[in-house]
Image 1 (tube, rainbow, N blue to C red):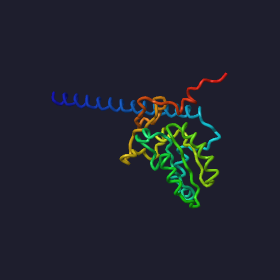
Image 2: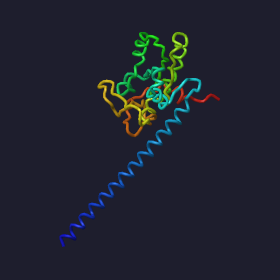
Image 3: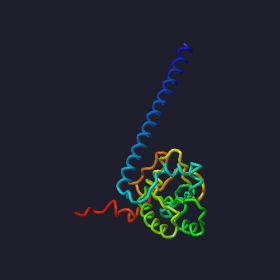
Image 4: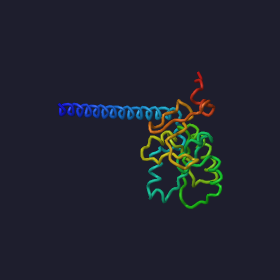
Length: 216
């Protein structure tokens, strides 16, 4: 009798274990689908405002330059965070400078013979694209050895690149899984990251594109 009871208990445990494994597998599949949905939505959104006349790089292209020793010997990569202070306080791409910090550091930087790439980013790339337009004109006159590029998909796209360095909390300098996505509309970050948004979003920076009425 005891043997039968024990066998029944073991069978129940094995059944519970199998159910948990199945639940975990289904949950993982759902996360993969959700991640793919967000990435596709991000690409669609970015395509709506992308100006092909503005130089841009994908996260993968930037990482290839950073991780390639031969490219590293020829180029210096600088990240320029074009977001507001409140957004940057949540997280930044490692090594990124604010607009103010960039201007101060850039004035002191000497031409070392290497091509300098300034990679501008914001939430998904709309504001940073504007910055690249302005910066490129200025650099063409004063520093032709420096090229500005917009990071396509910006910090949200960065979260989707699995081998990209984790975002940093600028205050603690430690890795974080939180990212400011400006508003819920742009909360298309990887499922591994938590979205932070403005409590009362000010859409002035982007409404010119997203909310303007079409002229007839």
